[in-house]
Picture (cartoon, rainbow, N blue to C red):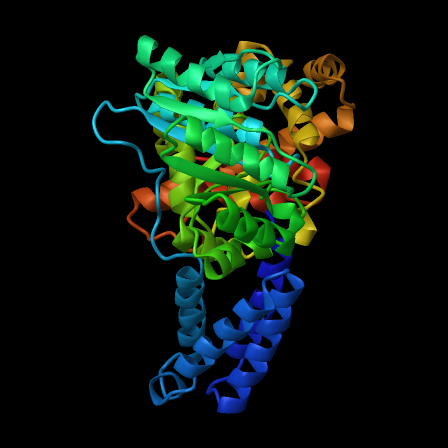
Length: 472
């Protein structure tokens, strides 16, 4: 995620505080100085950082914190609360017109920010909620922009209205609204043109569209990878055209993430959604409290649950129930493993899930190479190369059968042996765990019980023990 570097730095700072029995004023100030540097390196606006650190210091340097039973934990709690406040505190949804009235949403932003893809993502999201959306192609300048919207609209099962590139965007918008009224479409997304940089011509065009049709919400799409420039863009757009909310894209990339912590404080505009990937399903509602939890390494289990509910259909639910039944009986075969891998992929993959897990107690740098989708596909290929009988009963896997599996999956025999060995070890561990729980002994350690297979991680070849541990 965009905040990985900041998370690591903050965790190091907090670890130093935890190592002290009591905190002095100088301890807090020294820690806040490090927090300040970490936030500046994450490209958070310097004025925002200054006020943020001041607020924390004012609350942390007090008798209640200094003389508390766990002063370090109190400081972390204050940082968490101030970070939530910084990003807007409340979670805000796209504001729709009441009842069956049509809502018109204008998508704005610079070229390359991801407006077209985001418009399709939003349309798909609201279609699932029972709305009847319409995508409108107003970018008549960028080559293939209209085609891109049509392709994405088709994937989402949403109609795309286009009049080619011979009419002005305001004229197309007006015709699109008439079309929507005739066809009962109650949520219209206007995909406007962007520019490489802000210019008056672009702003005039947006104003012309607003004069031609009633726009209820103007959403600004900004690229999180541009850092502080994203905040400057948001401020300028709001001053020139008026912005109701912000969508940050490319938050899954190797960015410093400062825009998310600065937008609300600098512009007063709330972040409504964040784009977490290229897939049309990779758009998350922005929850300030959950984002703060991710940044501070506390995880985001609620979003993980949301993703699971969205990704898993009725068939998956039946498979999950069957898998849970197997786990309770201390049984877990390769069919369960295969199902868990497929469900995990629907939820964004292993790295996405790990980013939302709290308190893993694992150094991400040590497992970065191991979290490799290609490697997971190799393991899945091994399972797919087994017969139904072999998947249900791993004891059937003789050397000859393992050789066949290796050949069929494009792996060497050593990789197959390692995978099966780790899977067998995990099975034994699960039986022991379930045996202890049946005797009423409380299980200690990670509350996410299925993650036990992590112990086998020793590099890409060691991933076998992981996927099967997911209780999805």
